Amino acid sequence: MWRAKLKSTGAYLPQREVLNRDLEPLMETSDAWIQERSGIQSRRFSDLSNETCSKMGAFAAREALERAAWSATDPDLLIFSTLSPDYYFPGAGVLAQRELGLANIPCLDIRAQCSGFIYGLSVAQAYIESGRANRILLICSEAQSALMELSTRGRNVSVLFGDAAAAICLEASPFDGSNSRFGLIDSLVHADGRFAEELVQQNPGTRQSPIASADMIGRGEMLPYMNGPAVFKHATVRFREALTELIGRTGISAEQWDWFIPHQANQRISLHVASELSIPEGKLISNIQNRGNTTSASIPLALHESICSGQIQPGDLIAMAAFGSGFTWGAALLQY
Ligand code: COA
Image 1: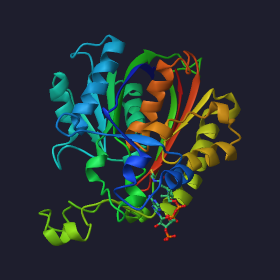
Image 2 (image 1 turned 180 degrees about the horizontal axis):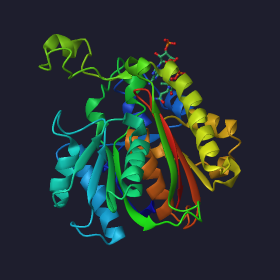
Image 3 (image 1 turned 135 degrees about the horizontal axis):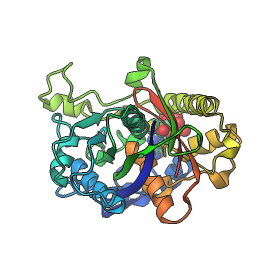
Image 4 (image 1 turned 90 degrees about the horizontal axis):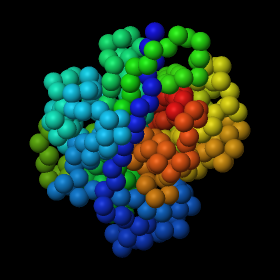
């Protein structure tokens, strides 16, 4: 039997830091409003001349590959998660593969938005446990500031999101079933497409001509739309459900987790979920304050930063959960 083991992590942050007060001249907002509603103080915005989605993903992956001591011929599957790909097609996975000089391995693109990392983990788990892959590179990268309208019209979305990339290397480890607290213990994913339009960017899409007209741009139809209160309400419910299901499936209670890394959507959501599951605030890992919501990169970025700072130690049990557009959601339990 095989189990996926976390071998290494890597990350990339764009150079440009954008403080809340940098947004104030661009729209009717305030540092106080943003901090109170989301906990965010600053985020990074990419410079698209060099920090495209695939390039940032490759920068993060390079660090993860180096830390794993893997060469370009070692990974046998690349999984790439993003909602902000370089191109409409092909997916960003092949662009990162080219950038990294990886062999002709399959590149699988995941479109599960903020749940992309957990979806990626569940695919990696299936490939490794079935013996189809031995070494998997999972990249999550977001250059979503390119999609934001920095104006009062776009403010409920644009103040929340930031750009970043993170990557992990997962390796097949022999597993005799005796120690259930080993490697990627479990992952689960769900979706409910009835709410697809509550958090959506409809264009460019093929329902309308993908050739943007001046009218479409004027009406804001090329921009993300979010029903913030609806997303908030569903997120809190689905986070709790996913984590409760994870506890039931693994038989490992929340008290036994060393750390909880929720998708960094909003600090108020994270605190609410932690409180519902009686997870002490000291076990809650948050980086939203200076990263914003980095969509699928948020969990692996927080994981990487916590490992690098020494907060997460070998052997620690880490619960993770995400919720995002789709709606999609999921959870995973990992022993580092
Ligand atoms: N600055 C100032 N005011 C803003 C604003 C901004 N950036 N964005 C929205 N507002 C205004 C609204 O227009 C509204 O004004 P009105 O009362 O005059 O109509 C008011 O603030 C309250 O808006 P509302 O959307 O009800 O606020 P909220 O308390 O729900 O907070 C969010 C807004 C977006 C922070 C909150 O809904 C949220 O976090 N939702 C979940 C978002 C999320 O997690 N998304 C990612 C999922 S992966």
